[in-house]
Length: 260
Image (cartoon, rainbow, N blue to C red):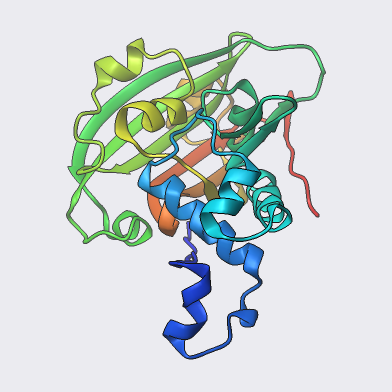
């Protein structure tokens, strides 16, 4: 598994260049506005699912043209941080929307028939972070983490075995009972009850052979081929807040991604 860094920080677009002694033209104005909007999202001024001010209102607030604001919002919408709704305005994206589930779950059925998804929590426990997990989460080795193991089934067939590591301080109120009773997307729970919104992820994908645990929980043959997906998910400020390892059965599914 591996992680990646990076995120802009800005204040007032008009004063950025003066404060640094460089010309603000080095950063396009719409990029500065985008960073300012990101600051509002990160601070919680506009919460997931809420309508944000109109382009005209934002233009007046930031003292830029409506076109500049539109370009900034276009980029944020392309990054799935904002959602445009025809005739209604622009909203903060939320993991509770049905379409958001497939931003991070890329395993798709070979057939186009709708599938029922069932999630079974195997265990939840608190433990000290192994060195590699601590590194990926930007923590100290031995710091508290929450470990979750679950199986996802499609049309009753066990298909994904997942292990998750979450920062213990951030998710100290997360319990096995709460996870079992919660029926929505897990990232929706993190967003609503823990104020943590996953906005991007870095993944590594490799082939793997089924071990004894996969044989038991996924019902596959020993050493049968599986897809191993290792992910680090980040919230605002490029802060890593989840490490996830999934073993995928691909006999009736495939991993789908779009490249541009």
